[in-house]
Length: 201
Image (cartoon, rainbow, N blue to C red; front, side, top):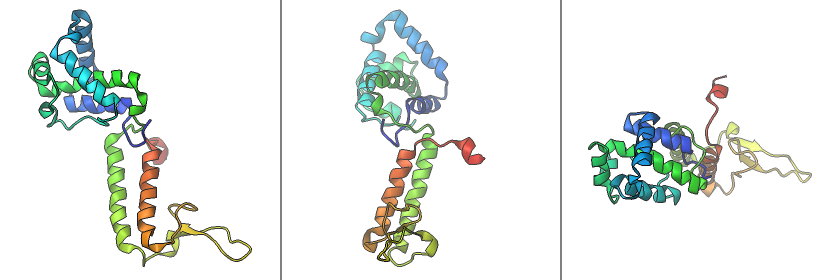
């Protein structure tokens, strides 16, 4: 599992959202593939195999934007679009099938993010904070920015940032901002999905 990447459920949800449909449409395609056996020779089948390989390898951590799906240069893409009624956005239904197969082959290609949009918003917020902190460091630290660790017998204490108590020392100040933000971004990626009900409470 790769922190910061969508889970299989999230990956499928993003594909269905881009296709403006629900999983019923995927089931219809699966049924047609199973009944006709044309997954081995058709453009649709070849397209699924290509996308499956790329997702399983980790090179496609999330589905493409809706306006790009028809322009991606996959083999048999045009033939697959024709078999899907001439609508490029229906290719996302094949991405759902490919993601499911890829998960069976390599579940570690997926992550633990259940809300991709929310996750990207939180990352963008942290990156904005990075820019803000870079302006402040190394000269402007308020008392509540700091965490003072246990004082030792010789009177010394490790001073770290309150947002990373015991983890990110304030010295050397020249790299303090960069180290703190990298720590926060890493923790955000590792945190994965949030419990919105718990946060609301």
